[in-house]
Picture 1 (spheres, rainbow, N blue to C red):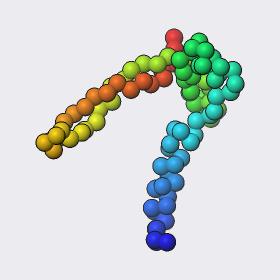
Picture 2: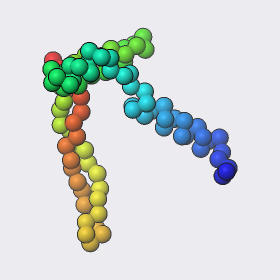
Picture 3: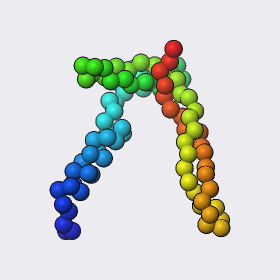
Picture 4: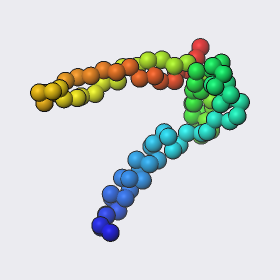
Length: 90
């Protein structure tokens, strides 16, 4: 087993704590049903000052995400792809 320093272990731990897939609350049955039926596009999560999380129906909005790819000649080129993001409705 390779040796890892404490700073490398802490860095991996911090990445795991910031990962939204691991830290988001699971949808309950009625929320999953609303999404499956098409009544709601997504649920917007907002952290309140007391530390709790409030969820409300949201809407999907396309936001540009920029990245860099290489073309067939190996030259970098900018690529923008729209990414759906859940935003607060209203």
